[in-house]
Amino acid sequence: MAQTGSVIVTGGASGIGFAVAEDLLRQGWRVVVVDLLAENLSRAGAALSAHGDGVRLQQADIADEPRVEALVARIAATFGPLKGVVNCAGIARDVPALETSVALFRKILDVNLIGTFLVAREAAKAMKETGGGSIVNIASISGLKGNLGRSAYGASKGGVVMLTRILAVELAPFGIRVNDVAPGPVETPLVRELLTPETRAGWMRTVPLRRTAAPDEICGAVAFLLDEARSSYVTGQTIAVDGGFTAGGLIGL
Ligand code: NAI
Image: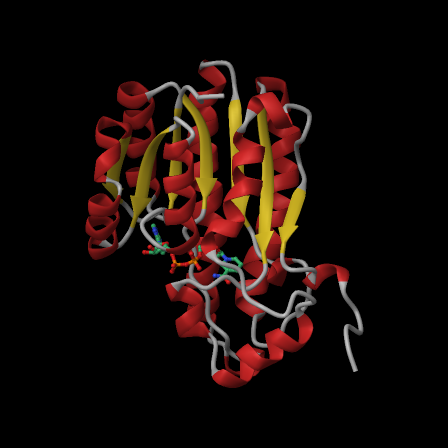
């Protein structure tokens, strides 16, 4: 069924967010791609140009409170009704806890957790006025399991998982559902920079499907959670799209 309404996709100019934006446009959603990096936005804009007026590009830092407040209000007023948000913008580092500075820890929390909260809060204000909607936060398996080198990143994503549950409870009376998707390793610019040959080999030993995902493989779970016709009773949940990682224990000898 063609979707009506608009969806904000943060981090939508690269990797998983870009794949999600493209998929949502194909389903008939109108999409606002929000991203920090101008070069990513111009590449995404060229790739999505066939969708004409159905797509808008906005440069913004999701951790900048006044900027996000103004941006979401403008989107709701001029490109509404706002029916969905995919909180995908994020940053990651693999650093041992003993070498993690407070500045790095704060930076990662600021973008991944506070930025996600801020966009969700502002979008919920708009959705509350127009009969509800769906918020999908991109968490991570590193928010569900203790992975080496991920004290800051894992804590930020664990925070996203709990934030999702609390927002689901608080926003339910307004017809706003809130869920998260927790991907395993996905081939994106972020992961190509993050993984060394050694850590990549380690992941391949612990993911039952023994491979990374393509960004497109995350889109189905996101589209399902945004689609009121299919997921209207689903809120406060985490869907792991992880090749079996969180199900596994000893997966081979
Ligand atoms: P990516 O680096 O390809 O794309 C992330 C996009 O977010 C970039 O375009 C970047 O400019 C944007 N961004 C970063 N900080 C921003 C900010 N402050 N404000 C606005 N935009 C900002 O990364 P990828 O891999 O597509 O990751 C997307 C999300 O998925 C992230 O939240 C990441 O933590 C999560 N994730 C990724 C996994 C992977 O294996 N690639 C696994 C699990 C979760």
